[in-house]
Length: 137
Image (cartoon, rainbow, N blue to C red):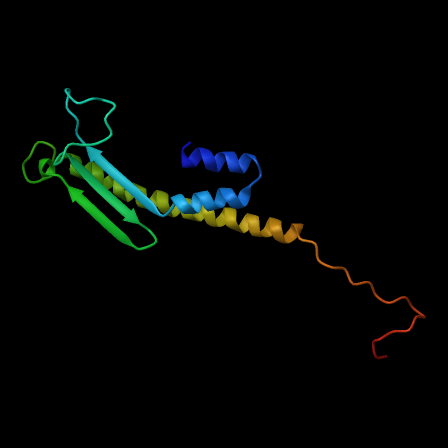
């Protein structure tokens, strides 16, 4: 089952803490791959041929950004125009990360508020008048 399905299932079950843990676990890394397949490629293939892809990995915890630029996307090679598309997707990915983190923060705040309101705090009853009190007058 995909992580997004696990997340939705936990939310529906009311397991907000588990849903949040799944979301935070998946929010660490973003991978964007742009690749060119040929007519002879198996359409179900999920792996690009070496030199035929642009790949960016962004780790938001470590702040690492890795880029792989295949030889078919350099200089005057046939797919150089796709570089701009890939870089636009990376920029959009950064905005998606920001939006998702903001949503997770809001979800976390709701969970904290819900847990705080649902907690039972001991109630201290005032002493009955006329009874001996341990408090000073």
